[in-house]
Image (spheres, one colour):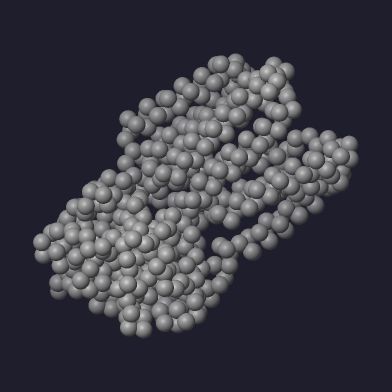
Length: 517
């Protein structure tokens, strides 16, 4: 290739794609320390994006290749970062379609304009889109790091400090090497101060970011992206009043929301507006679990079992005894060392099932040995076959016993597997007897008799749905089988179970155990 194409500006642009690949892989890991490193890599990508065009114009290094590479690398970077955030549930996966088509349509608009002798210069809407996507990307990444910490991720102040210092040095080095001055230098330094302040505040925040918040940020990002698309389309016509662009964008955005799975989820449940408020009694967290995050709760006879974890480190089983309406601590047991990211527990007669999200496996444990001998004996283990596994339940239907599981990233279905016919060499997904459709974002499940209780989050609140199992199976989906909707006592419940015909759950924010009266 001609050396004029391999100038330092184009090398910066290409390096941005390589940085993006590394950053995205780190985000997929879900490990809090790797997320912080990805955050720093994102800042390097953004600084390189800001300075490459400036340096190219200042030093007369603008090339035809650069004109193609710069917007292409921007699109690749944004697309894959938002895709990684969508993997963790912070950005609706179906929004990615609008990213993809916006850039394709704008590219073809430019080509069409060039054929007619018209040159489409950079537009304000394009710059606005870039700024909003930049802000949205960092806000969602910040929310992801907060939620991982709230779920048990440990991040030391020392690690934060040195990571921030390394990131600062790398970014300042870029500014020094390429001799960035003036207003652009002030802008970049201002952004770096904001990003580092956000980083240092992570350990000072003691609440999770709910889905409504992240959806609102995502919706704003896509709304501005669509406005940019409309603006480019109307630019072909020449003189078009701004009000028409705004109206067209508004119609497109509203239509997008009306056909979105999120909106259909909201309106498809006719019972939600009539959600029932019931009385709950609560007790403070049974036992001191410093640094542990409770993941699942199950009631077995007069015992209550709570599984807690320090994410990616260790997990414990806390056992409590319930006698005469008094709940007392009984004992705690360390789970096997390889279970570091337990998401849920369920029991079925003589067995306790544990699901680990990191390993994507379900472990069938001997319950009697746990209770009587403090021994975790694995009877069988099954790979789930899912990307991220979170929810378990045992269900009886037509005199047969099923393990029910769903993938919480793509949780459109509940998968029913006959537990008496499972083999360890195959995934649970491949051994599915049947599946039923769910429009819910399912957080947890519990079944007693023919009643399936589904813990779901909608519009920043948790709801508990009582569902007729047989009716749901015959209809192939949960919605027609809803018998009752119950308002939860906490906005972020973890786990749900039934004992003595009472609901029991754990409030992640309030740090209380709730029992229905």
